[in-house]
Length: 362
Image (cartoon, rainbow, N blue to C red; front, top):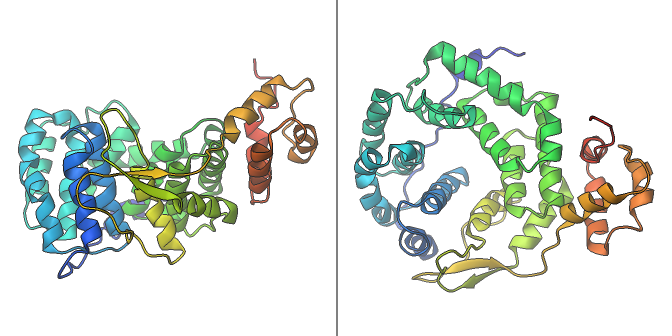
């Protein structure tokens, strides 16, 4: 395994401070008002997720904002310590919000106060999974603090890299969002570009194929942003798929309780647009409550393909050219087209060899 020293030396190199602009475009102010006030119950999981993802993607796409924008978030920023005391289970999202807002230009030391409180209660150490432990540790490392100690940090990184170096997991299960977040965190800590082994790249490739065949545009968008972080060429059919789908976004009315829409997909797709030189967060948006929806028929190739593979009367093979001939007459036209598009991408044969489950294992 490559040396892990780079994680210690360069882990803060991607913590970017944005230069504030004089005035924020109205669409961004309307977007902020909508997710802060209208869409989800305050302090709910969905409320936290949209806030974090929105402000994080603004920074990742190098979109600066003015004090009028930061003023929308000031009440939330000032309440973070109290929110942490009454909901310590949400410490990672609260610390993430505080740190992102400070990097965007909000004045204050709230994130330092949160870190002291979190450390005093060993909340990162108490996490039940390495996924959550890595998220908490990353937030601490951005402030040059280690929650686990040097040995604990290195052990966590080794275990995480071993986990994401299993391409078979990502060809068989919908784990792409978790993989995208994990790789993004390791990259932000510094050094993963030099440690992105063939196995890690294969995991990313398999997760992207899985998302493409599952019609999961949000996961595909998140994985494409990771491809760009690691300077891996993005498969053109998948990139086109995301851009076509998000070009059909329409604005709806207030999001009713219990409903879902395409807001997170819209946010995720901005990195894809940024990568091809399109404007980001530039769509005109109304003041007041609104929702976002994708028009058009949703194809679900994954479900149909898995069903056909399980019902085949011949033994399954992992050889794509062989199986292609057997599958052609059994699939609907939309599923066949999506599969053919995937098959034009580098690495599809290796993905299909795992995905088709050709071997007897029980």
